[in-house]
Each structure stands twice: as C-alpha cells, then as structure tokens.
Image (cartoon, rainbow, N blue to C red; front, side):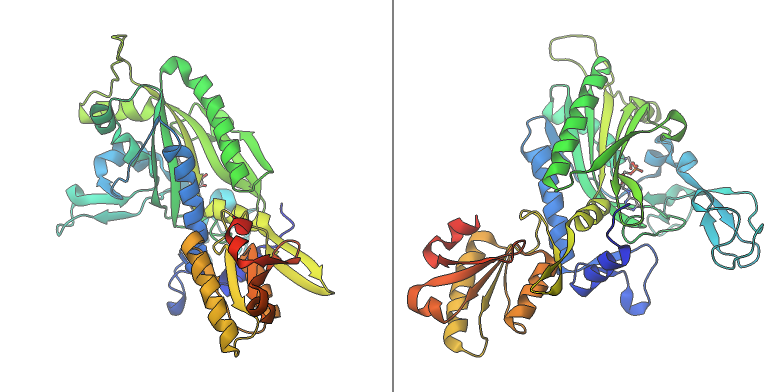
Length: 430
Ligand code: GAP
C-alpha cells in the first residue's frame, strides 16, 4: 500500500480543480466523477501519450473510434450478456446491497448486524437501454462495458480496407460503463470510466512471442508515466476472464491497497470465432504469400485511464519542508503536467511589470500552449498553488527584468531560482 493517504489525493484533486464528484450540486451520483480543467489536461496528456506511443509512432497499428451503443448481438456473442456478472448480496435487515467478494465476514457494513446476507445472486454489470421509441426485446442495447468489442467488430473492415500484414493491432480509447455494485476508492472503481485498449492480431503459433513483446511495451509506457514500481501478477486460471488463456495483472500500490492498474490478456481466437459464428461472416485472414488462411489470435493490453491517473497522482504526491514550512507538491513528469509554466508579475499593482509579464506569457504560450498567467495572491501563495498542481516552472517578472531583460525561473522540485535572459527562456524550458 502507498504511504500517500486517499483523503489527501481526493482533497487536492477537488481543491485544485482536477476531479469533482459527478452531479455535485445535486448531492452527487455514486460512481461518477467530473473532470475540471486541470484533471482534464492531465487525462488528455496521458491519453495522447498512449496514442502517440502505441498508434502514431508505430507502423502496425490502426486506430478506430466505434459507437458506444452497439447491436445487442455483440454482447450476446461476446459472452457479456450471460457472464459479465458480479455476486450480489442484500442485507435482510437494512436492505443495503454489496458485492459478496468485497465483504469481510458476514457483518453488514451499514447496519452492523451479522448473518443477514442470503445466497449471492449474479448481477449483470451492463447498463441496459433501448434504442428508438419502441421499448421491447428487439430494441435492447447496452452502454459498452469495454472498448474491446468495438475493435473486434471492426476487424473485418480494417483487414478489407487496409490489408495489413499480420501481426497488426487495432487501438481504441474511449468511455466504458459498468454498473459496479459498490463503486469506491475515488475514481479507481467508477461506473463510467475510460479505457485505452489494443487488440493485437497474431498468427496462432506466434502468440507467446507477441505476449512477451507487449510486456516490454507496457513497461516502457509505464516508465513514461513515471511509474517505476509496478508488479506483474500472473492470474491463475480460475480467476481469469472467460475469454482468456493467460492474463497478467499489472498492480500498483494505490492509497487504498496494492491493486490492478491494467491487464494483459491472451484472448485466443475467442472473440473472432464468436463473431464468425454469430454473424455468418468469415473472420479468416488470407496471407499475402498464398499461405493457409487462419483466424488470428489476439493479445490484449487493456489500460484504464482513471487508474493511470490515480497511480500518477499517487506517485507524484510529495510533502517536504521549505524554510521551515510544510509544502505539498506534485512531482509530475513535465510532459504530463497540466501547466508547464506559470508566468507572474512580482506585484500585480505595477502596470509596467504586468505589461512585461503579459509579453513573456504570450511568447511562452505560443511555444508551449499549456502556460498559465497567474497574478492571484502574493508570490508565495502562487508558488504554493503551482506546486500543488505540479507546475514544473514558475517565471517571475520583477523590476530587474525592466533593466536587463532577465526573469527568474523557479524549479518546482528544488525550489531554486535562477535568472535567465528572456531571449533564451524558451530553450531553457524545453
Ligand atoms: N477488455 C478487457 C477488459 O475490459 P478489465 O480487466 O475488465 O478488462 C481493463 O478492464 C481495465 O479497465 C482495468 O485494468 C482497469 O484499469 C479498467 N477498469 C475496469 N473496471 C473499471 C472501473 N469500474 N473503474 C475504473 N477503471 C476500470
């Protein structure tokens, strides 16, 4: 378990505009969260980095963005209608409901009575809805519980249009929905969240090789997130999802406990064969060299965005002491920080300083984009605020700037300041 406390992360996230409870103004909606400007920036930085690493920087990957609502046959064929369930129990005294495998003992966490839970019943976690004005069996649809199926259903399209060499992958990022029985641990277990998934299609004889490569690829990406200590846990057969022949869970020391950050699964030809059977359309791949056609097997690295955000915040959360005062800061990697540079006039009531600060701000904004003009409160308060949101550099314009065109650049981690000529400022901050 991390030494960082959950309440510190949740409090900073709300106080500084990263993540708010969903529908907060109406008392919230359990398992939902809203991203404020800084949380959204952090989330986008993580998602963009993932896309760049695994799609843009590679020649063997194809991106898709499938509809969230899909034909109900997708979820029948994939096994989700029958088996995407968690065990649900209800307390006969207070009627509270819990996920049976999350309970310790037989004491109800709400009313404290023991022996009030009956036999668990299986609860399907998909959000059910109807498409169109008629509410009957044929109009049933579901909010997707994983982005993966939107990839499998586009496999044939990508093969027919792009005719890629095997192995190749299809990637998708986007929302997924699960009606979790007990959402908890901040955004870790939400009812609405985002996934970043890849289905990597390989020849059936080559799956082990590809699995190993994906272990290396995942390690590389986690390093880019600044996450050094991630544990690979081999999932035993009885705990694996219905479609998997091998799974590794990547676990991280979150504030609540060591828990799953992401998964890597060998899904065999389970999904493509099911689609072939249910749709009557061939999922075979025909090798360009005239070799024997085959239905590819699949390696699936599946990342949860919320869990990546939580791990990044936990790893970055730091407390130290500066000039005898306690300081909290986020030691975020610069490429993930929502704000790269904050620009301030030393005093906000001196128009000549403000004017010069605006000029420097404009120059940096044009170059880096994620630059903030900050003239709220005194300079000490500004540093504290920027430290808490993880801004790597604060640039301050003071009276000396007007004389010699130098500014101070303060480093978040060391709190050291140095004077830098404005004409080399951009290269200094690169
Ligand atoms: N397509 C495979 C799949 O969806 P999963 O293990 O059920 O596998 C993959 O989910 C990842 O999605 C998890 O490792 C986690 O990061 C994220 N995830 C799953 N359920 C979640 C939830 N309720 N809240 C936040 N993230 C979740």
